[in-house]
Length: 342
Image (cartoon, rainbow, N blue to C red; front, side, top):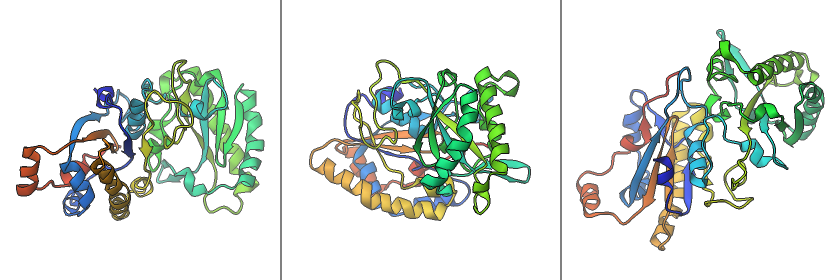
């Protein structure tokens, strides 16, 4: 079904974190939002499908969040939960790759929470110091480490060929325990690759605990997260890793990904998220409507914690026009979804 939603090639705009996991009065607040361009889009479009996550025990949710799955579907990538090869896409050559993202694991009340690596604001000099300190440990385990950008490195090893990992966007702000490498099998059945990565994480935590780079930092760098693992299929057509522009040929055009809603959603800042939605309404949805009015078919993908919805532009039917006149769309029925269980 998800692949069929993207059968007709057309420009696609993908909005991660555009659905809110509503609790209590939040749904009512959503219903009262103006968002005139979104309302017009919903009136003039057809919802061609909804893809809801189907996690497999013991996972609480899929390792790959809906917006990443939607991007993969849109460009024709094979879908392996926790195995979309984002790192291989960014790598300089073919192979089995992973991203290594430096991060802060925050310990509070006996629970360890993953902070957003963006908040570390690492500069190139600090990144280089940490790379030089950590690289030998990875090399001892046969992992080639390459700089990519401050705070994030590329790692190459056969270990990453079939290692499934949880996306950063799935884990940020959450207890890390259910999402550690190997979580899909349970701690008692960890693969050799998962065992090695967990051991390496422990070693790096000990190294970073006393490293001088943390002496004057408000947010310490105390671990890393491995994600984006896998190998690009031989016949895969690829695009840039941020999914915003095509750096290499694609089987289908890469969606335009708008990250305006990401930060407030990850921080569970409902008011900030609503404000961000008003910006998206004016700066993204309005131009989308203008392109439709100019005769260019468009597609909009709304993504939440555990589902994505696909809307294709289409001339409104008589029923849609009558409904809009006598029973306007209530936005909570579109943007509010049930919360993900922790």
